[in-house]
Image 1: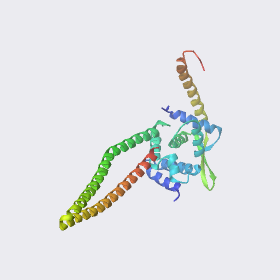
Image 2 (image 1 turned 90 degrees about the horizontal axis):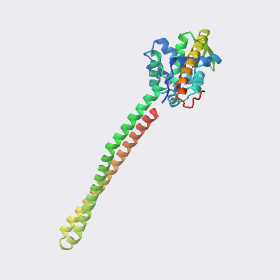
Image 3 (image 1 turned 120 degrees about the horizontal axis):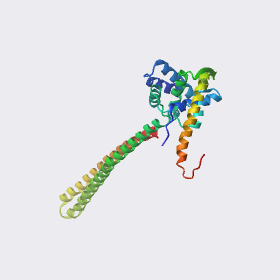
Length: 183
Length: 109
């Protein structure tokens, strides 16, 4: 199905509130329009005409209403959406930036604690070895265990960071498409 | 800030363009957009209204294997256009008088 056929099919669905005569002539008009304009992709059509949903609601309003506003309504609609979108972004930032800072802090603290305990353990081991072999071995073991914990910790943090970054990328993509709609 | 254009003026503009020559939908929209900012969803309802009022008539012409619908002004449309031209001139004059009378220099255009 070409982009034009796709768009017109969708437009047909949204125009059902009109009488079948009105719907037929509206469809013919825009089918011809798209062909004459030479649009080849859906995004080119949407750029000029709006989405089938938007175009259809404007056609219906102007077909059944009395005074058509030539310039006011589409812009107002878009402006409102733009404002809502900006509010959404601000709210998301307010919520997520502190959380992210917390998480980073937590990660640093966990690593620091582990490293600290590890160093402490190794540090204890060395002097004690001289007098108490088993004691020294105990603290050595502890230090090695803490190295193990550190490795696991780093793996967990790396996985969590990857997951967060992917989530952020998806969110940004979604916001980008929403912005394109109202731009 | 935009000034809203009334249905009558839209009708008049379309009729005036068709007075010069017949146009098909897309070309007619292009001509309109040379003069004013209108959304693509405006043209169809205007043409439908003019057609129903008998001010324009349509005919098809084959183009690259498909049909193109052309719009042509009728004599009833000519009369309607003359009426709208008069309305517009009166309206324009009245408004100009108010806007220009505010001019302290007494400048008249």
